[in-house]
Amino acid sequence: MSAELISILVLVVVFVIATTRSINMGALAFAAAFGVGELVADLNADEIFAGFPGDLFVVLVGVTYLFAIARANGTTDWLVHASIRLVRGRVALIPWVMFVITGALTAIGAVSPAAVAIVAPIALSFAARYGISPLLMGAMVVHGAQGGGFSPISIYGSIVNGIVERENLPGNEIALFLASLFANLVIAGVVFVLFGGLKLWAQGAVTPDEPFKDASKDASDEGDLPEGGSGPQPAGTAAGTGTGTGTNTAVATRPDAPTTPDTTRLTPARIATLTSLVALVVAVLAFDLDAGLTAITLAVVLSTAWPEDSRNAVGQIAWSTVLLICGVLTYVGVLDEMGTITWAGEGVSGIGVPLLAAVLLCYIGAIVSAFASSVGIMGALIPLAVPFLAQGEIGAIGMVAALAVSATVVDVSPFSTNGALVLAAAPDVDRERFFRQLMVYGGIVVAAVPAVAWLVMVVPNWG
Image (cartoon, rainbow, N blue to C red; front, side, top):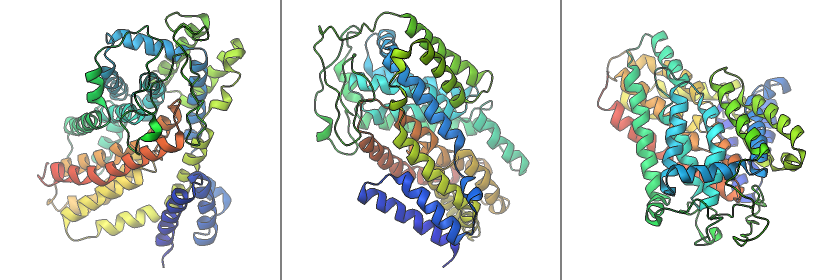
């Protein structure tokens, strides 16, 4: 048995054990990276650690640290209140507002994870407050980011168009952008309908000043893909109080309870926090600074000024999520180092039937991208597609668009950067349950979207 096949089988075993034994998949993946790297691929420790996503670790820690402080001092509650007023109480419009905001950020040049890191904590806090499914809100944020991600001036668009030009393939920047935008818009519409959006419309408008809404049903009675999420939480409930063991410990207080903070007023701490959030956006978009390092720096400044608000913030960092994501991506790095990903791609590209090779490449892009860098896998797959694209039987424009869509819509997976940020940003949820929801939803996207993208974009022979 080849080393590449062994490494793939070990990954399957990791999934099975984590699912059946409730062990953190990240810890299992670290052990698998050590075993496969040392015993199968003959890699040393430095080569194994080369796949550790240090930048993602800092982003996850930094952003969740900053927004833990924002939740503690009531800034996120104030933003939720302001959002309700902006849409005149129509809660159903908020997921679409988040879709548009993240799409606009990526379209003008923000890296997709940076846009999600900025918007997701606010969006998920809103979802917890008003009983919107966290899966619905998180998916809208991620698909919004990917919808704008291939504009001609975006990071993803520039990279893919550069690869196409370097490989001397025919390209169309506008077609690539519109293909991604349309695909994500359609998926977002389906998600909105399936996971509670129509019920939100039926609710009508809410009063922005009401402290909380009673949950319509207990989240523990729902399935893996619920419509209502964890149920609405009171304005004064501290985020991050879930135990992670399947029990939500948040308790609604009476509207007239003296412990409920006033979410309509701006205090000095909230003003400083809002300024920090704006500074994070400007630093990432205008000055291309690292989102994680910037967020940690801003969090430290706020902690120094208002230590009482940030005393427990470090404990609210989603450490189990950090372990999960970093472990899995370290193992994927080992797969890349030992050539497993290239081996799989080359095996597919050698198939003599171009349309079959095209759909298999789309599926490889989707599956690998669900655990690794979307742009990185596109950079590997587009060159692999060159031999049969050069034969003229497959349109290059449609093939590149299908690969781009297949490799990015799957970023809702909790193992991808965007999915990990959504998982880490969700307050007042059972994280294990929310992780399963994202994994199931990501699996559905991986199974369905590449085939649809191939049918719509490749089979008609665009370009």
